[in-house]
Image (cartoon, rainbow over all chains, first blue to last red; front, side, top):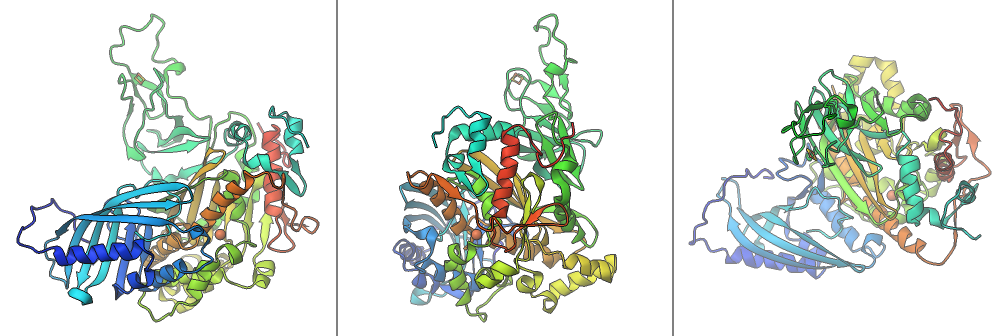
Length: 171
Length: 452
Ligand code: FES
Ligand SMILES: [Fe+2]
């Protein structure tokens, strides 16, 4: 589920309707930007993984460290901490703005759901400093409409191996 | 107290008192420059591990006192450190983080160097002055004068003269031994990538915090509360399990932090914080199949008694002043890179224990993510503290900072050090400042004799 082989991109079929996925990703980005973290968590399946690798083309989260690698248990804890008033690294709170674009569907792998790739730009402002993050999202999405859920979300930052100050708000 | 900005030794020594230090030690760029030349450019500093350069030609780049170096295993098998600068017009020669090569070639005019830094060939070498001689050491990439590998851990000193490595490391070498002892095959290997995090604060804050048993209960309260409320029946592939145990343990009562942890300090600024987490709290000890397999592998290779001795060594952070902190029990090393007076970068690495079950390393990686990760639920609050100390020190509030907790009650340690009576004694900061004074006043190893 985590290991989506990288291959040369193919020209996507114009026949695939990406609008349901785009609507979902825009909704997800908005929940994060506006601080609805519990609702964001509710988008994930019970055995979901959320992964931000520390290296470009990192093959897995088990043999190499990750900026974030959460199974469901850790993701729940991460989100609960975000709401704690004593989270000093969020005092003052970050404000974020996410743009999600360039969606494409990865070729089917035979597993359940679909794999959607997209590009994102995230601006984070906190305490007189603005940080700019950019990269690729890979979502494994299960179900349709209101029942659409994230089974896996991988966030590949273009500067994943740069020295960074703390990363607290999820990407 | 009036302090001039030309720092005479007398002024410097007045800035450190037995139980308080002057604020400017953390904030003045001039002090920082002196620290670079008097501490980082003279002390023994950790740069990497031999497993990064197993074969002749293997190299990695490093920085010490902000200066770019390349650490290489030369053709004769020796480990050498070279200043990463071309002898011609000064371009940085090696641009990759690591690699394998049979020569170094400068990208500017193509001077090439042997792996020991000596000049190998110069294109267009007819046009240089008559006395130009490729054999002249002035045409070499300059070697760092002192490099020492202690059982695979590579340290160097940029200074030709000074305290010997053995005097520098003293009893603290037992923490390096402990990491190796924990490998059933008696060998460790750097693996698992690197974390790089940065904060707007002085380098000293980092080392100080690693021995600070009085802070987790406050600084980390958001992750403690979140972990305490976490239901254990939510799905985990093992990653969350380790992370959540670690966060919950930070919420141990003050009686634990005061009495059960232990803080030991040794000459030259070194220290270790003791039994912060033992394996039972973190990996479920013998109830955990991986740990049980590991234990079996250890006993098969080392025998029961030696295995038990090793398992009873419990050190959380071992700090090697001025640039390294390690966790032997959990196979992590952090290297501290001062960038400016209020900017620091820290690199963290993991080690694989040879002969241990494969899952052990996955646990090491999970542990690294939560304890040393840039997106950790714990470390991010420490980074916030460093940033906030910097902001606080920019004020015109207290001129002197207190480091006197436990001052009158420190006790001698049988191995020649001092330990806090309680684990929250600030003895580790006082000890670091003893070393700071030694280096800054040109008297490194003041507590020990100098060996040229
Ligand atoms: S600067 Fe390196 S060859 Fe000229
Ligand atoms: Fe901490």
